Amino acid sequence: MSDTPSDASTRPRRPFARSLPLAAPLRLGRPSDTWFKPALSVVVASAVPQLTLLVLGRLDLVMYTMAGSLCALYGHGLPYARRARTVAGVVLSMAAGLAAALVTASLTHSTAVLVAVGALLAAAQKVACDAVRIGPPGHVILTFVSSAALFAPQRLGQVPAHLALTLGAGAVAWLVCVGPALIRREGPERRAVARALEAAADRVAEPGPRTRHSAAAAVHAAWQCLLASGRPTPVRRSLERLVVHAEAAGASARPDDPDRLRAWAAQTRARGPVPEPPPAPGTAAALYGIDAERAELYGIDAERAALRASGGRRAARRALLRSLGPGSHLLPVAARTLIGCALAGYLCAALGVGRPYWAIVTAASLYQANTTLTWNRTLQRTLGNFLGVLVFAAVLPLSRTGPLPLVLCCLFFSFAAEALITRNYWLGSVAVTPMALLVLEFGGAHPAGELVGDRVLDTVLGALTGFLAAALVTNRRAAGRVERALEAAAQARSAAERAYADRARTGPAGLDRARRALTARLVELREAADIAAGEWWQRALPEQEVVAAERAGHRTLAATAQRPGPPVRAPRTRRGAVTPAPANGAA
Image 1 (cartoon, rainbow, N blue to C red):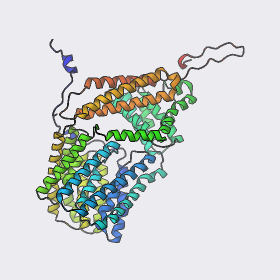
Image 2 (cartoon, rainbow, N blue to C red):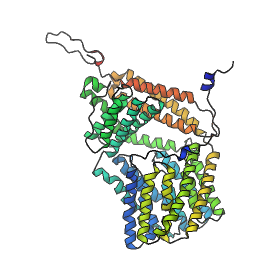
Image 3 (cartoon, helix red, strand yellow):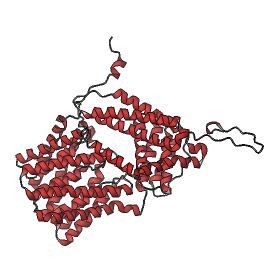
Image 4 (cartoon, one colour):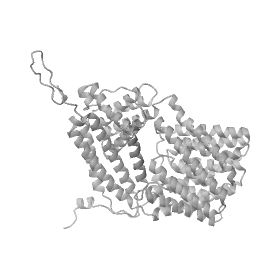
């Protein structure tokens, strides 16, 4: 029987080497709504130790303090309770990588050994950052510092003092990142909830798969932020009610919902009081009042308690170990990073380039979730570095007029890099490249032509070998991850439907936990499908099953958003006559 057009459209496609875009990866996007936070944080965290070293006349030690200062780039999307732990972990990880690099550099001058250690560190840092989902800038900063330290002159006796400088600057970075909690304790939570409200408004205004997924992901991120924020406060209670409203908006939208949601988002993001919305349509609060709303929000309190309990911590550790185990989907990415960085370093060393660590860092910075995204980053990194060396050549005469102008130039490019990188990676690289080159000037002047030529050559070699490794090292586990995500989404949907059917026993708290679990599984399913869609050399993807699972999951979320409360007993009159109770909460 011949295939009909509908048959052909539903047949799974087998992706091999996909076509690679050229213009799309270079288009500029909208800047992040919080771009100024990491930009200002890294400037303040860098200025304190660098100006101190300037006064002491020891700018040759800037590389070690900069390692700690760059930790101020992390954790800005996290609530302050988790941010404090995350940035502290980044500082310790930075010090550990730097220690390994400095000890290796002090024990051997063999380029082959140094490149091998640099590639191993890059792969380990990549896997660790992806496993804990540290977020941007990810492993690149850690690899930049450890790779540069491998090729810096070092004696074993100097290592403790240099590590002390890094830890001291890291402590300053920690204070800079956590300090704003004294002024606006719930700032990260407010921004996360504002994004959820804006995404819900977009979903109501323009229904479709894209806005539906964006709204689900934003609501999930808002709940995760609130869960990680610590004990509830009156402001966080109001934020929880807003997220409940954003969840319900997609299921029971009214014509004025988008404008109202966007107005609430603007008020939430501002410094004034958090808006107090009416009970979300269809929720228990709307039908049975504030007592039922408190019962609904009890679900997130139960989750907080579970996360604080030792069992919750053990579950988190088990999940982390599974992500690093033999069957992990991160292992192909680790293999790509290891092979690509090693090839880049050895090729540069064979060609006589004096700084092969630039090639190692270039290759390490390319590796994204799949081959297509790695290609995009290859284009962006290459263009940004080429333009960046031109900027470096232009500002080099100014930076050599004195130590203070050199420090100010580095601080300026640190700010510019974070201000521009959220629009597109290549634009941020235009500022990162001159900053990285100017760091070398703290140890002494180098011929400008040599620096520019080496950086261009290292960029080309690192980009070529890095992408070659990504194309040749297959990641066939991407399709398997999609299948596991499909199964997890189906189980979560069944659990949500059971909780809804048995809501008299589970209560609003149990239903809300089931809905949040389903939302998380749908977000993970879309992430796994997007990653697999851009991967090469793998078996056919279950695309139709993914679409069907997403539709079914979102239908379940919409249906369970109409949450009638517990049955209401019929009140008795004074004579014992029974007055009929309202059905389903309706008068």
